[in-house]
Image (cartoon, rainbow, N blue to C red; front, side):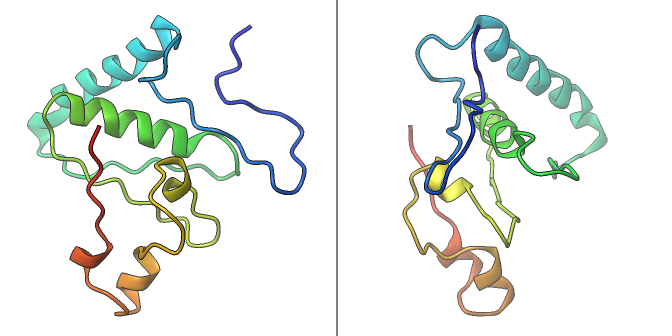
Length: 125
């Protein structure tokens, strides 16, 4: 069975890993689900939507996984995408995207410690 979200009993120091749609061997249905979601969002584009929030009331429901893969799918279609990790307590996107440690983020911008331009990081394939 394909374990898409690498759930396991975590001990200190262990983290969940992100399953990117670009990973080799990713099931066709998994990749197509994101492309279908992108298409549906494109069709909703006539409503002039510029922001999409992915949220949940409980931890570890793969919100970050969905956010990253949807952002990648949208970017693949030529859209400009800004992916923002608004989890101020336990942000993970910087780790998943290998952006480094102690990077400037939302809390730094909100507290005027840096500008939005200083906090943005461009990722290339």
